[in-house]
Image (tube, rainbow over all chains, first blue to last red; front, side):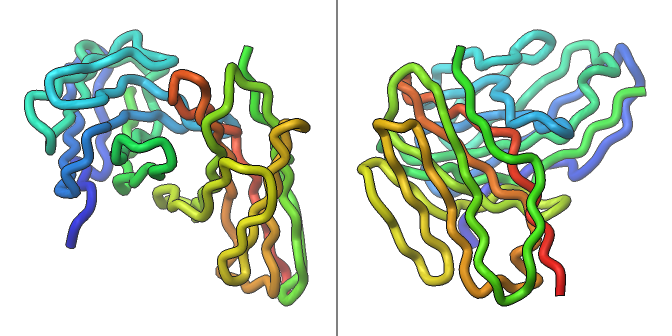
Length: 113
Length: 109
């Protein structure tokens, strides 16, 4: 089944540890995104990639990094986790055309203690 | 700054009709999206408006007025499974999506 897969589903992480959230899509979408979702706030863009080999910063990029080595994979790395990074993380992808909706993965629930 | 406003929470009765409003102030406009998000799940796409007017998709319709910076999502014949959060998002002049905080819709029998 075509779609977008995130791993892990949930994780409890000690502050200061490094963590990579994985995201893979098989829809051959050019654009991919990482969002965080916190209670009472809208989805906030962390980083994005319009095409393989390029990445850009979103609204809340500090403390996060991404890479886009190929079309399918878009991992998000927390170099040294802090409690404020406790959140639900969604990866999404879309075709490049303006009216194309985002397709979301099932999310990763991350708790930093 | 850019801003999307939606009511935080709404309550409606099974079988009834509910309208969820969204007002926006963004740097440019390249389309408006509505998503549904059930608790603990990912958002799923409902509708897209780029021109003024009404788009109908079964029980769901979405309306856009670009001059007023306003959209609404209309849900008819409400079912218990429609209990969810509804997210409004606008694509700005840079083709970035600006998201509202979402409206939690509670359906009562």
